Image (cartoon, rainbow, N blue to C red; front, side):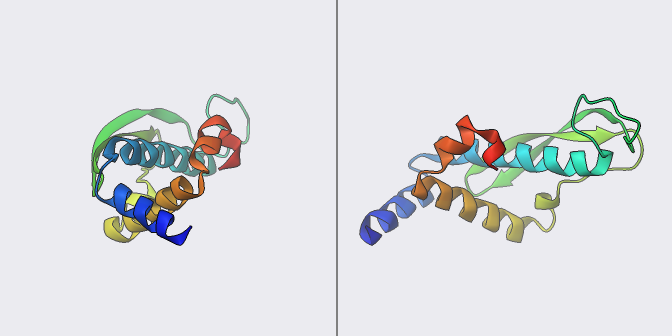
Length: 121
């Protein structure tokens, strides 16, 4: 079991399936941004509520360079204040942690359950 796991980790790290790792990172980044924006605005996207603290105001494009390759992000903009995803600063530490979580989920077989049940995140 340990040998199989190490072989799979080496395979993922060697970019044998780089597109899959990039897709998983992009998915996780979108989920993190949505959760952070919901916290900042006070409500979920599209929900009308008097408790809303600030409105969204579109998206801005930004490329995120990772070891798995370049990922195009759509970062939500706010009408008041600014927003920068927490995983972009500091870049290296956050990227390493996120890649490690994605790789572990892939190895454990959790990735498909995350894709089919987004509430599991």
